[in-house]
Length: 391
Figure 1 (tube, helix red, strand yellow):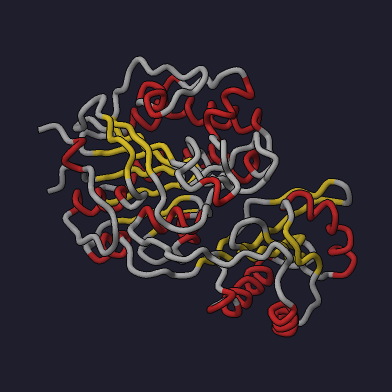
Figure 2: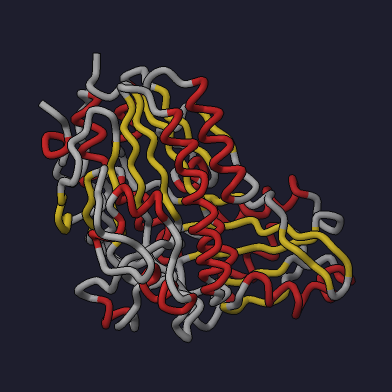
């Protein structure tokens, strides 16, 4: 019925590929997550990504540009900002015209006082911080008082950290729902995030029970697919990013390798539709912690699993790999970076070695998905469908 009955769409969270035109406005001049990581570690060893064309998008130490079995290019972001929310919503057709609010000095008392009133507890923190560092700093006080830790970052987020034995998960999730209902209008942050952790004094660690509570920014290609009766499977934090809108099923994950495992599992189960995966370890464990060695190993670990995904591709499958922003771990900042993102497209019915150029918007992916499945594209974006298919 469709040229591609299934599209496997994987976001390598934070794997940007060079500063965008307006990077200076964000303080990100010189950012290039993939290339700078490669320089820092003496070259990336990613033969499978290279085979799909990664080395032809940008010069990356250790990555060959000799062959491109897939179609390749890079994409610019039209939305204001450099966050997960902006990037993912643009991919499916929504351009965010204004930057989402950020809080470099913490949230105003009018917000915090009302939040504390609604949850019946005081809070700790209320400042920008690394998630791992703030539980080191305030974890003991949290365990002693039972007060949740509230913090933010350079992104538009309201994060609530709590020890799972002090504030049970369901209560933490309820607190996030309270915050989400409160943070609208002028203070409408992109995401409220539950950040549970476990452990003892001096050895706290975050768990995989994170949940994201996103604003809804309008109709997307995902809604069109769902209404056409197609499966839209969200793996990792995908369901949370879209608040469940347009998602028909899926699962959360415990790290990148679990995300690959679950993608393969759904490739065994889904007959028609979209399998949409976010692999967050690059960002969460390495980008924000300025750890280029860990980031490089995570990329190489994913690359080693890529042949398993390729082996599962049917003749009527299309694989799309991209990122949602950068998070260059070689810069002084621990925040996201305003970068182009790579675009790799491969299938048994696609042309080889096609340069898709620099796309004007991440939404070209959503437009391509819409054209393949014959559904309306409710937002922005120009399809590259006809550029990639074999006649």
